[in-house]
Length: 391
Image (cartoon, rainbow, N blue to C red; front, side, top):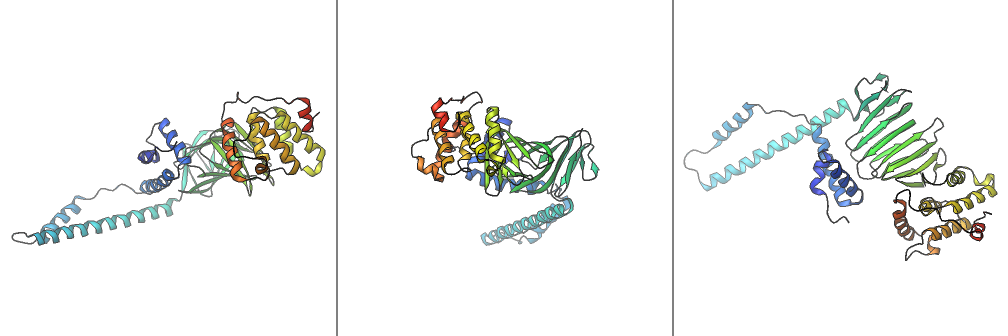
């Protein structure tokens, strides 16, 4: 699949010179190809440094002085092979010295520029009167590390995320630039709603919230945070990873995932899942099991009944979040909806064998990435429904 590398297009990709289709192809390739991604990081760093160096024209007197110096240094009389060799070595030494001087000057200019301006992103006003700190944005502005961008009820703004994407900021939103460097771009969404479109290798752009960290995997998505810190992610293309400590949810295009402070990301689900499925999943994720064991068991049983083949996305995540007999029930329903491939055993899955789970996940991903109309619900007959605690 990745035998045709994209090395020849990386420079144009970094400089935004490719057509939209070519840009998408390169971005998708970089997500999975370590070799091209390493080359991309090197080129991206060079492009970033070059972008900070001002263009200067050498004065004519400089070249005239070099020519005069070369003429004065040339031996008189007939030249010999030894003279020619000595002259060539001297030329090379001069060229090396000039290159070293130019490199040192470039580094000094970049360092000076960074100290004076600091890392920042361009922000454009889309509507109303967004602000950066205490300053209103009339047209364009710069968001520096540590600064807050805020919109009121009638304001909207667009942020250029370095050279890797864009973020549109909805009304009543607060966003802070936390970090921007070649290996990591990070913002904090304290409140409100944002829409991100990222065309970069995975885990380069991060959004911190009170309940989880969103790590892009080459994607487009919306992320909302309310006054209590509760969040909701909806992915429109690619994948997003939601993380809090050792809890992680992988959310593909067409799926959503809620987050809660103190709990982290819930279980991802497809937006076309039944209302009952979504409701019971929320109970399992965010209502303590100790409050009512019977309600918990009923919710789990209803999930099994309502699940379609595409809903194995949710069931696959639940395997890691339930134990004992509950995990057995989840496995049995998954095996009915999408039988595990060869080499994946019941015992291995119940023991959370990582290689087996990855093999099954890769197979399930073919179902998860189908259109929303695929993978319709498979109803259980009454005896099977009773096995999951539903009558």
